[in-house]
Image (tube, rainbow, N blue to C red; front, side, top):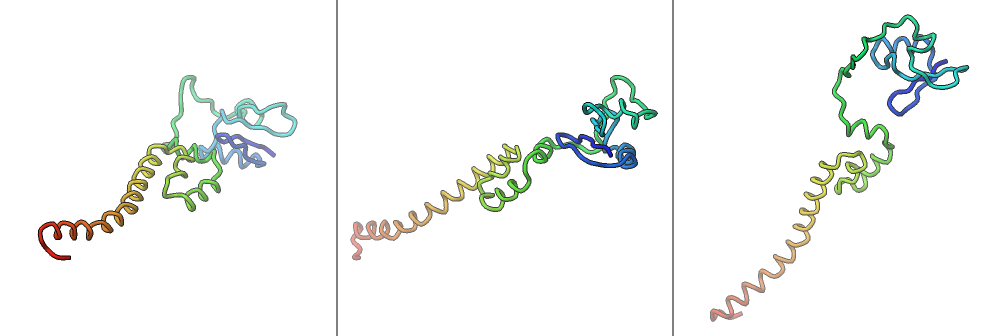
Length: 146
């Protein structure tokens, strides 16, 4: 049985056929770190018996991922998703979950919008509470009776 490293996570155990399927699908490459019983440390797949006979890319080639990688999403994978979901559910209006996920720009925008909305909601009753008194005082000074 084999183990392989994907990002910061160590995956496995999987059999040799699964490793070959992961290679064929592009999920792992010859540079992916792998380990199996009897090995002293994790080594690139190409340095193992399983990697023998696999094509080696030319020196200097840097294969690009087939899908664009969003750094904020990859950062979230390293974070605990349960914590992220709980933050979003309980104090999501403040954008704390976005700060946790590393999406600071979105989090700041969300925080500012929500704080402005909260201030508006809290100040509106004060405005409408004083308006009738202001109108009454203005009428009384102009000779109107109360």
